[in-house]
Length: 168
Image (cartoon, rainbow, N blue to C red):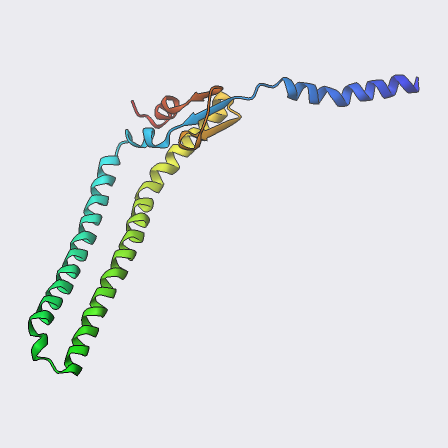
């Protein structure tokens, strides 16, 4: 009797493990760029970003021209400067050049930040739709196709996510 109870308990404990092992794991993948490229409003975001970038480029070019003009003027007039005046002018040009370099470095960071700021709401909507598709369709995992090296057992869910977002 004691052995029978132990066998029954062992079987009852093992059943969930066997049931879980028989549950099929379902993988999906999604190329976020593919979905983003066809989203309504994407062109507006691209235009805003291009305008922002053009403004930074114009500012950088103006600063560069200012440095070049100051340097050209210095070269043309350097023979008329006293050593002290020459040193002051050189320091001014050096400061202008450093300011230009700092601006260039900061502009790259500003561009990245602006792009992230503009794209984030779209990315959030795509990921929420992918999560809904995953729950509704029984996917165990959904991977970003950009990070996927191999996906023979993975289904592309881009069309399902587009449909969830109302995109044709």
